[in-house]
Amino acid sequence: MISLKEARKEVINIIGQDKVPAYSTLGDWINKGFISGVIEGTSRGAKYPDHIVYEIITAIKLKNEHNIKLKDIAKFRENAGLNKVRNLDKLYKKLTDYVNKLEKEQEKMSKKALLSVEDLSINELGKSLLEVKKIKLKLEFLKRYEKIFSKNVKVNKPVKPKENNIL
Image: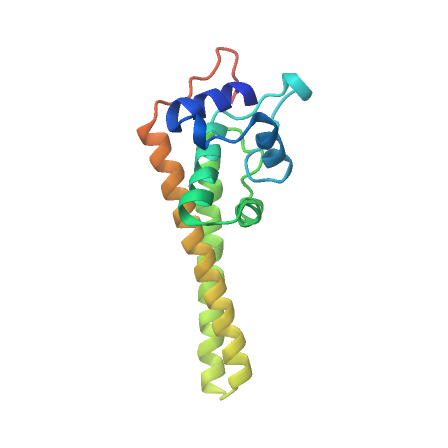
């Protein structure tokens, strides 16, 4: 686990000072669900998952390079269950589970749309197609998030866990 101060320093080392929000802003990001919350401790002694470094970088890149609003990142992270995940393996499991869930929803809505065509129900067809489009957008966002996150995990040196770090 890592403190927010240590995480911010790691992010600065990776992407540069000018792109990294202030410590207090990162605290707001945690409170709003843009990045992971506290795993252990409180206040100044709070510890976060080591991968929060990559979550911060991912949020910065999605916001600055892809014009994605932070509230949309928070909504995605909440829907995927990514807040307070303790380690990378669990985070990737959550992402995989979310992909599977969205793909099942998409299949269900596609079948519903086909049934609407057979029944000549234009209103139902329109609703079903709109739902399929929403699910597709969620899948595209998930893929973008995962691509940026994974790239940073692979490219940058891994955050070294402390000796007493129990994952």
